[in-house]
Length: 101
Image (cartoon, rainbow, N blue to C red):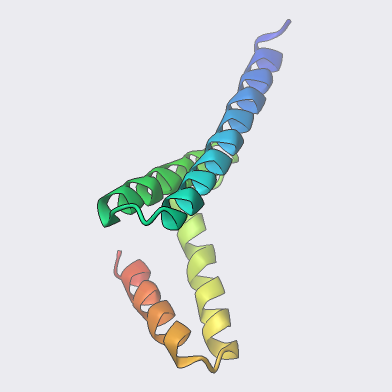
């Protein structure tokens, strides 16, 4: 087996592990919300989800900067379409925080 084949197999295995981790964290989040876990526990799960997301993006060859640009573009598109002031305020807050980085 060539080194390239080994790298591809390793990348596939790591991607699959991250997919499973992301699903498990999402499940933990929903379970925690249902069980009214503390804000600290919610923040820990969300932070773990963020880490898994960035690791998955890196594994797929997507930089944090590209991910951020795509998120900013998506938020701006939603803001142009939405009339719901509650979401608009929250989205503007996220947009401001992302553009500030």
